[in-house]
Length: 303
Ligand code: PBE
Image (cartoon, rainbow, N blue to C red; front, side, top):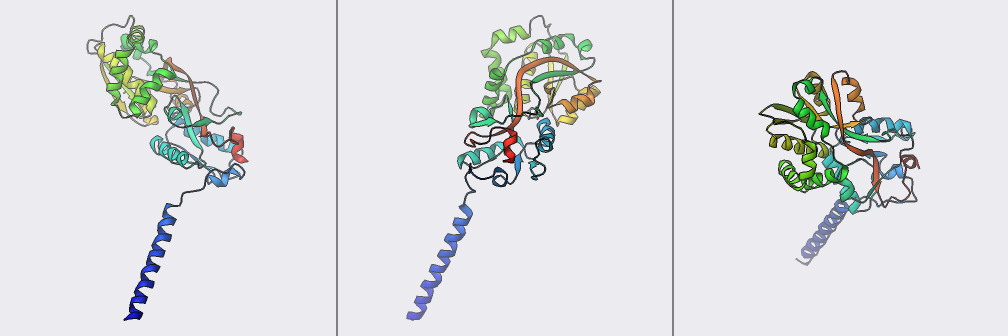
């Protein structure tokens, strides 16, 4: 009897021990950033990226060999903006190292303490601008809407506010309506001399990136308020450009030029038309959390 009880206790304690070890193992968090150690191994020589169709991904594929990161087997991990941002958030929570693809305007710089890495070779381009691009012939077929798109231009701040509202969960069309209400002067400037739409069609296309969601919904809503019949269709970047080039869509407000959307622009430039710059001062590159004090340039990734 005694022996049995003893055995039971030992067995119970052993089980408890194993369970504790297992649980601890599961909850072990990866190591914090170590400024004295080589960076590559700390992040598995991986840059956390977004969706494969993004221009920032093709630029980053050029960055890897250009900065000698290929020799160290650095790789670019494809994911999505949402997945990348949640990875970033997790890393920041535990002060772990991470290298991400980043761009501005975007709310990530408002939400997370991160910094762009210097790009001395200018692979991501020097001065990016967000441009409005239409099909050839749109101007002739719909001069009223075209005029509006020629006049539509804002800045990172205004755009950032709209994006941040959407990020916080607001419906993009509701945010657009609120923006219009709050910025009558801007809207008046953009619609100056723009005739009533009388139900004329405008087919906009966009990729579901935050900046494109913001500018597409704001411009679509302004044109709707002017009596245009605006449709907005979300698609991947390549089909988006192809549909404008083919003429099955009219216009997009989210071409990042000259570098980020550059490869697609080059491919279709004979069939499309750059209408205007709608947001100057955009920036594309790699970023890391600010606590990675020794990493300030893409060149530092090798160290
Ligand atoms: N972005 C945001 C896109 C364009 C808008 C920079 C992630 C890209 O093509 O990379």
